[in-house]
Image 1: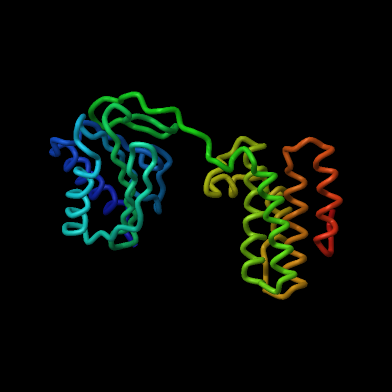
Image 2: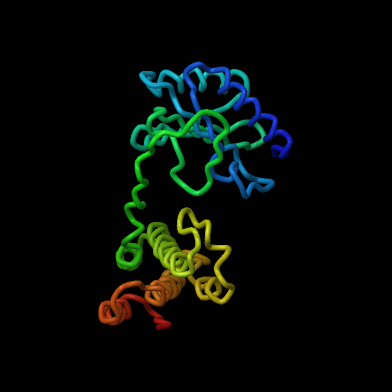
Length: 249
């Protein structure tokens, strides 16, 4: 496992590399690198690319350098508008997230953004996650799919859908309390009494009775956190009761 000292040393090397790259005109620390870092945080840096230079032209030699100098492995790319995010894994299980954006669109897309050098442009307004406005409805979809999978004798797929329904309910609880909804970041900050209400939604084995029990708890939590009109919740409560046995609601 990497040490915080290793992480800081490597991050400084990346920043110096960026300062010496004529195609990189700005850099910023983002995510946990811009605040809230702990023992297990990764390196998260974003770079502005000079006007007229394709992002891929800069990303390719950076990747070659990381592979050669740091024994890095590329995990995946995530293109978002004009930005390319590339995620690397270094020895010691150190994750490095680097993103490259044309200078005109370079800037803060979230609250954690610390400019290291250069100037910011005019980044487009960040769009909400496509599922974030429909957590309850999509969660109810997951409940139904879990039920269908149990009926079809597909316990592994049923467990997947139960997990998804529980996560949507927990995300609704986070949103209600003003916590971070993305990637489960707010779950551990939920009040104990809220978390405890979802503990039973964890599937302990793949027997039919256990899957139905966990599904009932996940569905109850989803209905409890619903942000839909009361009459809609009442209708769905009746219908879900037909699917989940036993029903704790």
